[in-house]
Length: 252
Image (cartoon, rainbow, N blue to C red):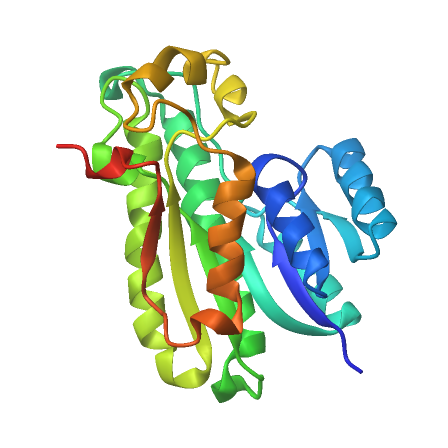
């Protein structure tokens, strides 16, 4: 039987790692994509295999087209691509827009937006009935910041995730009759390492008392939403963007 493959970009830690675990537990071979964290990716693969799943770690920077092609070639070698989770993304240190450098902006949009487009392009080329594929699903990880704006902190990050929301809806309509479903998940404040990478490791503790549920979400809670959108249980759902924000994204 041909293996079904799900590619998770930025899969070595945080939300991506939680998604990898759940996807593998449901019988798919998962590609754990990473950029620099070879050790973390290797440990995750070992963990998945110890639990009876199948996983392969593949290095690649999604803003680099050659790396993206390498990732999808690895998927081709493993079986039939069933799903793509566009999870790779970066956040930077808090800054106002009038302080941001062109290097910061270029990096932000190259990874968060261009990388997602490149991966979606390759996924559609493999999954679309128009291209001889068997269908599949794409789930794009956005952020509640796209609705909130992140003023004084990460307007560039929020804008990049707004682009992901738009891409999700547009691509969903573009391939709706080709067997490919495209949906998004907008996490709110989730307790992962991304806050530390943005120079604010205490952000969860600082903000959780202001959250509607008075706590941050977990990577597993986001991963459950991603898994549902990838699964046949959501077979009539496309172009949807699911807020997993504990109510934060609906605040005025």
